[in-house]
Length: 166
Image 1 (cartoon, rainbow, N blue to C red):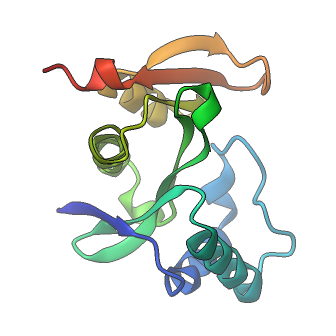
Image 2: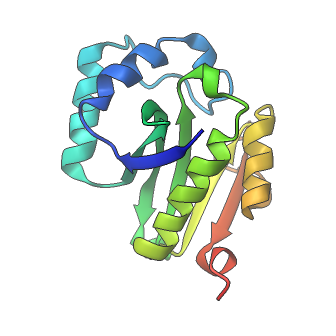
């Protein structure tokens, strides 16, 4: 299986909307589904806004050229040394447990550090999401412990100099 990421498109909203209706998708998330009620219109409007505003780095995750989710970095703050928050949403459950999370995160970290020249990335991980936890450690993230902002998750960080060792 070949995993690739590509810039997210407004047309991805339809695929995302269909998969996000599944409640299992949210069991390891650090928040509830952001739309209530979730509709194709709300999903499309969100995608349009994200593409037009260009405030974050957003990619679609493709497995053998099939859309299966999103990986993105938002809350990018130049005042905080160019750090941003990583989010990974593998929305097609048939791809869970197959290494997709690791590979799409590896690809976006390459982009973030080598092309976007970001200084660091952080992510919040629910301790019940064992796969995400293991992937973060395997990619070189450091566990800083329980988040002071979100008490039900841990904060993981990685800096550019930890990723790029030249």
